[in-house]
Length: 301
Image (tube, rainbow, N blue to C red):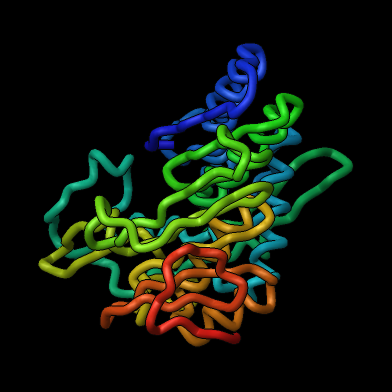
């Protein structure tokens, strides 16, 4: 998953649960990664319409992705792999050329997760030619949620995969898990803090994974409507939601849509968010539980 994973237990150590959560991360990465040639996802992306037998875990994440695609009215669509590759993100990020030549593709046509054909009776999926999927973000969130479920019998834990966080219980001191929200342009500086008890938090930003193509700045957040890196009035969005998968998807969707449409989406999904705007300033939606009062806070959605 090209990220650090942190698993914390706030109660008595439960080595068997911690080991099981680590094994789950490795197993899910082996299924969901587009960078592993033998993964289930890579096999599906190569199939060009042929039916591919998939594991129950892979079927579940594809169904979850399709459902979240519908809930965001298409602002989230993981079938943007051709656009990611055209922008230059065609290999694991640490290997991406930071200053390459411009793509010869002026318009990238992507399919949609909605075009997948899932045969539940036979546990096979067909992806029409042109529908190629990247499960990077939702894959992390989905795995975090699954690992948290493994740890739940221990009664008190937190799972953090590159900022996709799921926590439950009362934390090490009994008052919850305190999570800092970083300034996307200066990650060492916190702009807010949130206490989590039984909830998830995720951040999507255009400030982290960036590179140049033909002298033009690119990033990894693709707008499914255009097939190009998103160009909204938002630099980052942090979302509090019931699950890490939802927090991840809603944060990405709100960033793609921009502040006004993004906050409306969060309100419709009963999620809360913190927006860092491209022009400067921080705005939060109603229900945001942060500790820092922001001068540009939105009191209502």
